[in-house]
Length: 429
Image (cartoon, rainbow, N blue to C red):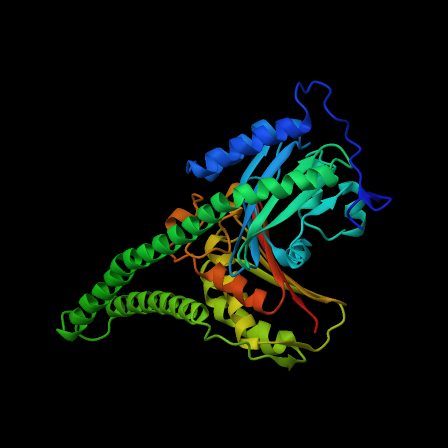
């Protein structure tokens, strides 16, 4: 069990601060009234959480306070507030993670707070946990996590962490229950305002994109078609071929945009359904075709492409057409953001639990701060390389959605200035 119990009760090994001039009950009452006043006065959620962080240290033992909201149809958590009494902090605001890579789903299911008395023992039982090693590197030993709901809708988590083991027991959970109740209105308000702002911003961006990115290529195509139509260039000479090639490139660009918008529209309307079937030879039936789509771009950029397969090949159930989209998007991104003449590598590893894929390109990569923008609608990197690349920011979101629907996960890593690697997993069965 994560919770530390003795004789059926929670036990906190952290000593009570001897400097308190008031009893815990008096101090607790004063602080909760202070929070209630700020909530009723419509202070921002950040201001309220700052007050909790700065004021509750004497009655709630913690060195780190964090809030995470749920995004992407309840499947991904993103950190919205982090304060710590130490440095460095590895899990910062903007850090995001699929719930499938955590044990937080069980916290939602119980609708009750969870106490982890010693993170160093916990990680021995949860070796695949992605976030826990970062918390341990920050020097944290215990954790108290409470799920946040709006009615039955899951909206996020509130985290208290301490550098001491066994810091949380019955008293802390009782205070947390009262505090969470007071914060619920401010948290719900902030959550829904953020969702509304995202919707408004997204559709504003669509309108802006349509007016600038689609209008201009179409106008250019019309102009060039009229040049041909009016006979200014005569027979198809080299110059005419050049014009036609430019028209084709712009048409392909438009086709890519239209596909992304159509896919997004179908996803949001629930019109994309997985058409799974058993695939015996993944390389032959899926991967090779995806590579063939991207190969002209690879050759045009003079990149060195390689593919590597490991493990015993077995039959797997998936939607081959959607997985082709995933591989085409990731390989295409590898070409776009990779350096000319650099390496582009595809790795496919068959394991007992499923198949692990990775696409690695040599290039500028991205920073840890930029990583938080990946896999989100209309969100694009702002590296120097990305500034010169047109796009919607939809490709990786659609990729994430497809993999999520297959009950898998996707992640990315990079050494800035050297490489970027996208990894995803499709479970067997």
